[in-house]
Amino acid sequence: MALGKDYESQRDCTMARGLELVGERWTMLILRDCFYGVRRYSDFFVHLGLPRAVLSERLANLCEQGVLEKRRYQDAPPREEYVLTEMGEAFWPVLAALGAWTTKFAWEPGRRYRTFLHDPCETRLVAYAHCPSCDRAVPAAEVRIVPGPDLPDQPATDPVSVALRRGPKRLLEPLIVTPGGSGAR
Image (tube, rainbow, N blue to C red):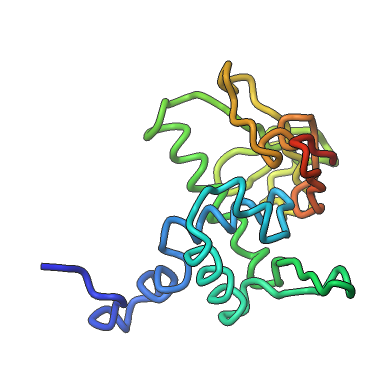
């Protein structure tokens, strides 16, 4: 039996409602990239490698639901970028928890491709974006991402991946990517 397009039979479940919004795999990766600082359609497209129609649909849905907002960054020709809203930024602990769970149990347990630090105290975050030094959950704006010790020997060469490997970068700060394949923080 094919799965339906929604969770209508689970309308009294908050998890089902959340999955309606972010449960599709590309949506989660788009949100991850938003936290990394990716904002422009072309950068999402080249980094994620998904079909244009799917990317357009997912971005439009995230804007419609209030997770992202479109902002104009250039008037002539008109160009827009996608920025996390307050609702979108509140999703950070969910992504952090999923990443921590995956690292511990699911895919190549123990390998770290990226390390997330609480920027003010330079402590590595644990599950749920928790800082063990400060003993509190850390908002994305206070998190620094650093290339981890287990990056592959032959890493991805798209401009977003190159920019993320260049070194420490705060989450949510725009990731500036140049068309030639090199990126800047």
